[in-house]
Image (cartoon, rainbow, N blue to C red; front, top):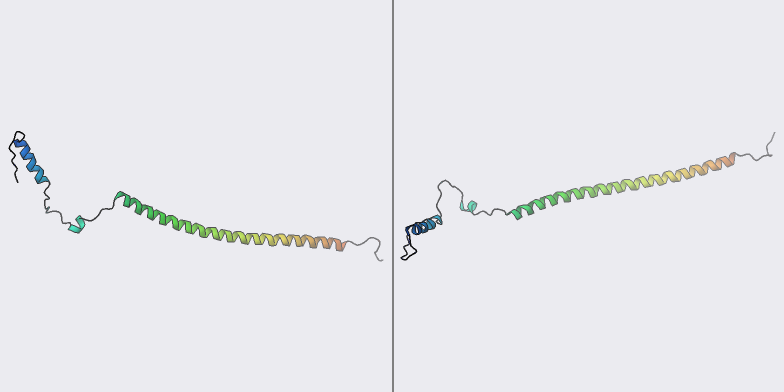
Length: 117
């Protein structure tokens, strides 16, 4: 498709440029490219989509870590409760032992002057 414009602006260079411009915009069928139309028109994920996918993956990993840490926290609380119960039991045992010791000390004391010969 050649275009010829008659006027003071028409030159051979402009006409050649116009023909090249039209030919450059015409899609060529490449014989070496075996991509199907579906592959050619496939939507490439945008940078934002890639970042979003990465964020979701990292978020899922962090949620798993949080869940594991909460489970460990619960186990530590249970261990703490057991330790508190054992400490309370030992404290009560110590108090009882001290009371028993005091009563033994009192029971062993022989009142003066009441001894038999």
